[in-house]
Length: 501
Image 1 (cartoon, rainbow, N blue to C red):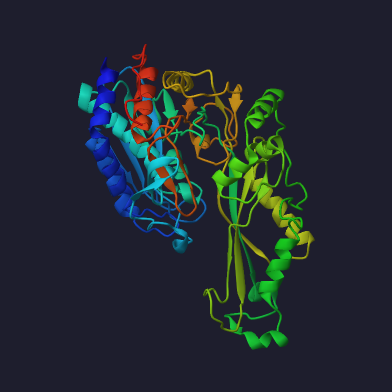
Image 2: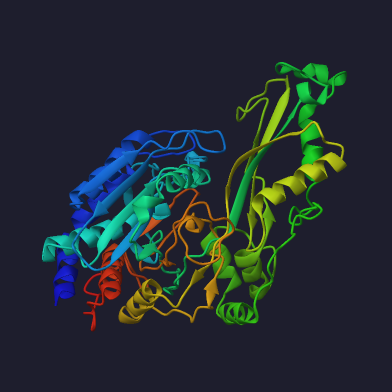
């Protein structure tokens, strides 16, 4: 009966909820540059105060183990006198805007546009990763509080501002304050969403990711410009650190850019289980490669068959080049420069039983063998892998929600490992993790309704008005409300969620 009233409240206030999301999108929160980070942390603190949390605090985490200062972590605790406590993980930071001319609407305007098959989507940086799903979750909790006066569970929030730079701040926060997570029964990760076709899944495990920078300089090499760039005409008689850097990178990867040529790079990789392989075969049978490529915004995948593509996408190991810079960085025009230094950024995605820092060692050893001892390496951060179990109350609360909302979902394997995008679940999971950094351990889960796309890309979006089997923002909020009620054991027969999308 309470949930019926909550659903009705969401329907009545959905326009206001969309406005709240727009206000949040309009506040930049770019972790890699620091733009808007202090203001965003205070904004998030205000969200938790609005919910009535007795404690809501912005923590300065200080200098992290990788040498960079961490962005603030916002922590809140809402004691509702309930028998169960749920922790909720958020990120409030976003990626920067790397291609402003590619956006159909300014990235911080939060414009509502039509994007078939959806009549309304919100365009903006952070729309799907992850302000849209998080605002839906907050709105669900606010709706419950407005209707019933209290939440069905106690809630602990941890919101980090460093997700897009290897979770360096929240890692230190959890190590320094493990006591803040005592007596927590489960953790909900960033709210899950539906696939473009409307399917749902329960997740929580994470791949591993280690991030490095490689720098070739005339000073370290002992050849070429030393202290600064020089005139490009001097290339006729002076060596180029830039060309050396390109050759160095080429020595680490196959000609097609897909296979690392690094001895021991894959050491420890855990093979797929038979059950996981069978699940991938089932998923492959439902996969249209052309549609999948269009949804991702790519011309095609490396592999031509769905099964291989899914294996690579979910359980593959990669060595990526995220960016490279040095010398004349101005688009268009001319300007003769012989750079004295070139730097490239690289993320390596890895799977259970592998070790990110060991992978970095293998790269260093390969560079030395290849004759590039002068190339400097900097570790930006490492996020170890983690697993989750499905035989938990929080996972069952999510699968129960999918059944209540008629969202198709497959039977999960006993343990989920990779979701195709890291998050710091290793800090919280009570299952096997790549590294245990603090005495914090609990069941974890990630699931939800709604949809978005374009994370890290131009025209990132979040669906406001759903279509077909895909719910919009109101449906996403109702799904989150149902999860909390399911976990609390207060939701036998859920009301129909679909008055609006």
